[in-house]
Image (cartoon, rainbow, N blue to C red):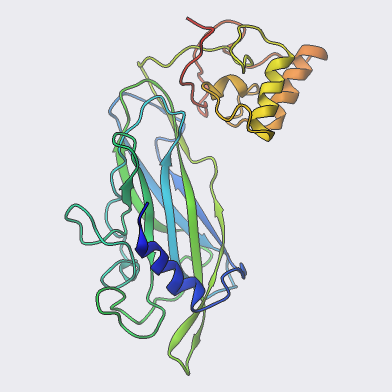
Amino acid sequence: MNNPVRFVCLGLSLVVLGRAQAFGSTATLRLTSPRHGSQVPPGAVIPWTITVKLSAGDSAGLALALVDLVQGEGNPGKLDLPPADGVPAGLERFSLPLGISNPGENGSSTGYAGLVRGRAGERNLVQIGGAQNTFGKPGAEMGKQATVVTGLALGRELVLAQGSFRAPQAGGVYRFTLENAAASVLVRLEAARGHWRVEAAGVDVNSTGITFTVAGGTAPTFVRGDANQDGTINISDASTVLGFLFLGAPSHLACEASADCDASGEILLNDAVYLLNYLFLGGRPPIAPFPACGRDTQPNALSCEAFVSCP
């Protein structure tokens, strides 16, 4: 992927002006949607919002924020995610020409809203956001505004980007997450040199993202607990969960929901323990669908692309 401007942003804000690994501040990025956890018809509009919040008291505000919006590999259907809805009010100095961001594409004047990247029909939205010009001197084509805005996102959530896409036609559970996040913060104005000292922030990304279920489609049925899809619930299923988590073998589960034995919405060590307790200690059985084939009705359900032992 050839995205030179990203390296310009990171170089200006992290390397030239400060200690890149300081992590005195923490930037928390969250992906939310009013459709999270709900059931929607095919083609429904799914609005989303990305916010950023800095830990209070250890910086003078946000200098840079970049993040990717990514669709889950196990989603039953794919789409090309469209760019965000422009630049939020108050963040114009993070977008060219006033600030520093990727160039626009397809007629857009700025790439702040993200770049659509990947294979046709399943493209993600990468490098959403940008940076302020902290050098104290205006640039020729970008960073034309050399006066920074302080106090942004300090101790409060700031909307970094908003947008929407339409739910795919294939039925089943969909997940979208944030990845490859980077942030830096203003530390202090170096009056003698006229620029701001900037340091990297530690990044905390909401790992659960957003999920929703497209109703009326053709998502496969499955049996929870049958992680290896051999039609039998036994110790080999717990081994499959442990191998997936800690050994990368298997590296991919065609039906993640079958390995989520406690229906928590995540595949964790707890799932293997849950299954072993059921098999050998008389513990509770896996959450439905179990023991017969069925579809997941949990609001935080994981994806299921295929399940060979169910019709």
